Length: 321
Image 1 (cartoon, one colour):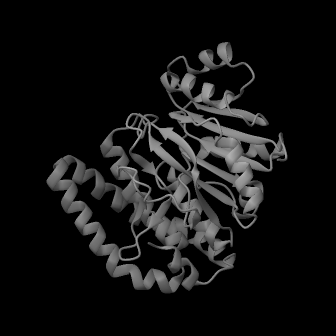
Image 2: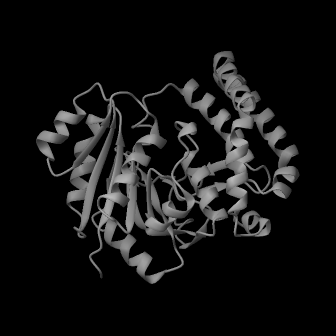
């Protein structure tokens, strides 16, 4: 196995309680050719001092405010490409723990499956380790709605087949450097939520493929790295899903899916009101209108993305599940 360098990029915001577990699991890897880059989003806890004092080998980059997930990882990606010339980049949440063969399985998979450009892994629930967290990101064929496959399901081997899929959860995903060089970086307008689905969509349109490797396992405290409120998450999701669609859907699919988009949002708003009350419903509605209000700002991005499209609409549709 070639000992190529993997740059591991970890965004952090007030996540000191998670860092020790995450860092230790990286250092226990049986594949030791890596560089950790932590990008701190203006943490007010002791994250920076903890890292400097206990893991001085980590490359620390920091902002003095919370820039959101997308800008933080972009800073790390640029550093990995420009300073370390890494052929592989791992984006990793701070609230994860890796199995000891996590890095080696990824490198082995890339070598054995050269068509794979992005690698999605099997993410398990940190606290309930027989429960799935994420086995790849998908878009529903019937409604056009993004979702993490397998989330909260008991693991009975139902997703133990390696296969090409739509996209990877950026909480733990490997990328070849050329994916970023051609596709670009994460969309910083998204701030947080659905930016990985957006990136996966853009990468697929550029002709890159995502491969799911169920043997590559990590454990994730879903929501552990999130310090925002549920209402904020709902607002961002509703805003960003509009931008994701206007940017990425090939025209024919966008037109065909319009009725499904309306129906899915109507059902979602009803369930939010029923299960979480008026304030959460209002946050979702506000996010939806924010997305519509700024939809024209996404048109230049759409033009560029669709101009660079190298696959058919039929192929994109085949990835929906």
